[in-house]
Image (cartoon, rainbow, N blue to C red; front, top):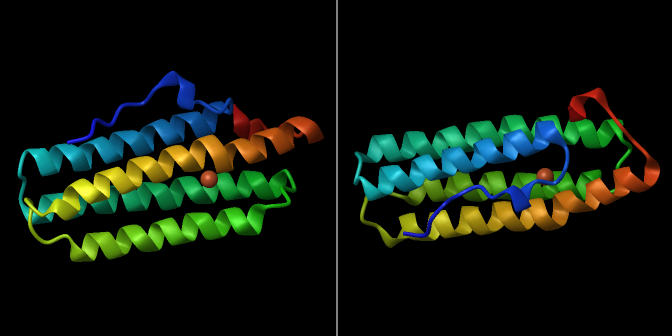
Length: 140
Ligand SMILES: [Fe+2]
């Protein structure tokens, strides 16, 4: 199954956000391990729920920062976070068997989504903050 490893090149340059993104990868890696170890359905569901819960926490931190920095694409960004959350919840409800190919599909979807989101969508607000000179203490 596809590896899940954090790489330094995924850092976007805001320490607090980078730490949170890295943690999302740890939760994703936990799901991968639960699937590989053929854990009980309950354990797999719990691992997915942990990622969903931490994602919600991270997104609200990030959105508060975007609001503070008057980011003009905040609404769109919020929508991206929302549809990801909804998709994960749907996946979690459908994933019944450990050997389900859906497990592999889930890992691929999340990894791809997180990377594209971080490197494309999150980089957009970084660039916007850079040009406006916005700096918050929450960025440390
Ligand atoms: Fe984001």
